[in-house]
Length: 406
Ligand code: SAH
Image 1: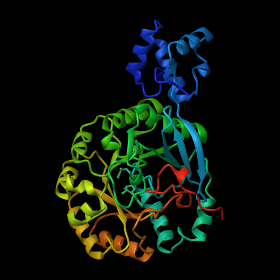
Image 2: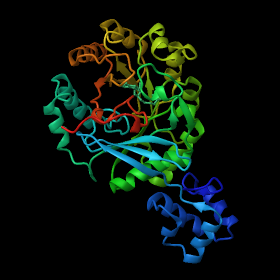
Image 3: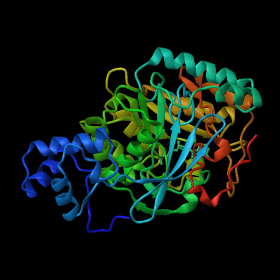
Image 4: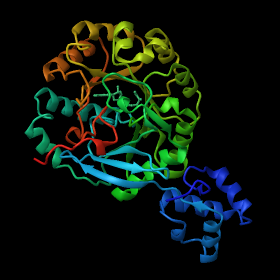
């Protein structure tokens, strides 16, 4: 385990690595070798930096320089191929990170959020919807179809879902992570480190392998803004994940939505809407007292979208609470004139969560109202529910038993 006097290389950008190399009295080209070793080869220890001589590696170790790659503490594999990792950091804290293999149309990334492949994603989302509407994704047939998918793919579009904080402070009433409260922010290195650890474990490498990335794990990225923005930049510039394949989801930290629109490197934006009026939203997401729907929608309207970009609004459907036809009509009104799409997520249940999951028919009825109002609306297929890997189920899971094998 690293002690606190160590310098972690993961999380340092080009300029910071250059300064480090200079402070060690080494020539400038060493910085490039470090970037290669840390972000592309994803070495675990200084000893593995093959472009450095043995004495130079020793020198780094003596100066307290370490890689800072987080440890994979546990792996849970779902019937649908989703892998939920428990990833541990130097201080003993841990978060959850997900790997959703090829063909993911659902949960935290349907490709259309993270990529620009509107056509193909519309088609595959339609297929996922068909499965949902026939009950397939929930039932045994759906599971069989899903489990046929390979877990490792070089040609598909696998998605990694990463965490930005240990726990979360936002307190959404339907989310398991909220029950943890927030323990601390992750550093940029710890955010990037989750990606590096998973890429290494899955033996895939961007940009050759197409990887989508969603900041939709534990925590609220916009409450750890600077580290999140730096991590996104490192993931683009150093790890090689395309900016257009990344999506960040916020519960609606309005001032940060404004700031984010001005960033040079920025993933696509998703906003967790989850309610169609203020009364309901305040009940489900207490942060709505601070930033209400009017403020949120004003920020969304002002958001500087790039060509072929849209805002994704996520809407968790809670049976009998926010899934009435009237709610769908209110949403259509709220979103009028915003270039956007809506991802509907039927509640993923969990212990301590008081809400229920609506029937598939109700979900489809809700979707139909939105579509008829001209709003592209998709139903996210739940991923990894059997291992508590689905949206809103991430809660350092050693505490939760996994479902028995089929
Ligand atoms: N804090 C950010 C990132 C977390 S993303 C945010 O709120 O956007 C997690 C997504 O899962 C959000 O859209 C959230 O509304 C949704 N979610 C939370 N709990 C859920 C649950 N129990 N079932 C389904 N979706 C849930």
